[in-house]
Length: 425
Image (cartoon, rainbow, N blue to C red):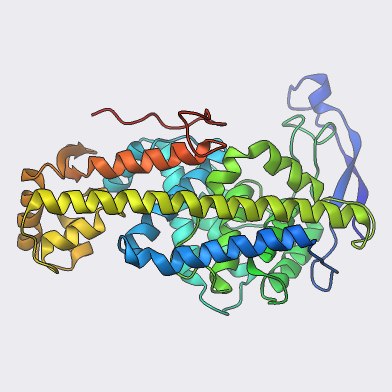
């Protein structure tokens, strides 16, 4: 049975803190039930929402190759997912700023943009996560620890990267003690056992994949196993589950962008999964179903908006080819047109690697796209030369703005959270 365990916080009288921050207190830490062998039942309407979400994600993965290149779509949606997951944690960065920081890093420039560097770490962790697990491969604790390590390595929290916490943490209240916290996760000594149970649950196949991912994410956030980076790691876990089950084998739905838009319901429904007592109780059943229903709806909405972005990108590519005139299929220029949605800012070196063509052929193709005003030359980092497909940056920003609107249209339904501005020039 899930329960509260009474713990004692000893005050710290040697740090020069305000009286309320250095006081001692008793507090209650929440210990959830294990997931393996827990009775889990979906209500009819929730089961229907889950089925809708799974059909939508499957269709996105199957249909992607009919419009723009699947790899390009996967790259841009992965970036959108990582940006959104970071934004939920308060890391705000615009798409153009992030793309330029990414290219600067590739060129070996030491970034002074700390926020962009942290978001790039999130992208790196997400890329590693989805490449590390394939169909039916087991998710292990080492996977979760490596995702976390990649998130925090090189940041101010580097010393905690990939390490399970050894101290009590909490959410809300004072930053110095858990005495008035909104939620206190399990004591540190219980964390590893709960994580091992979570991994075992993630490797089962008895539930629909979307429901399994939703439950795994809620349990991870409840365990809160790290000093920092729990939210981003927990949202990466969602995609590990969908990847292992074969549902999102190629293209990830940017579900974090929707959860960020529905942030109040997101937090409320997660809290609602934390019951006391038996897992078969009406409270436990209702709380879990309400959360799974919201998560499934977020997946369906994410796919809808991702499909709109794909269609817009296909329109851009058709326009580019029209501007270029006669473009031979399989030529370097044709390959560049295909890869730009996934890499809107390129250098001659990165474009050479992406196309697999010679440096000279790639440079000639870049010149051709510059002449057609598909690419614009920019400076990145220490005056390094790069090239930007502004149309894609505008489309990517529009995707972020659309996903921030409760109705999917920022002109008629204002964004429910902060969003990047529409790019100017």
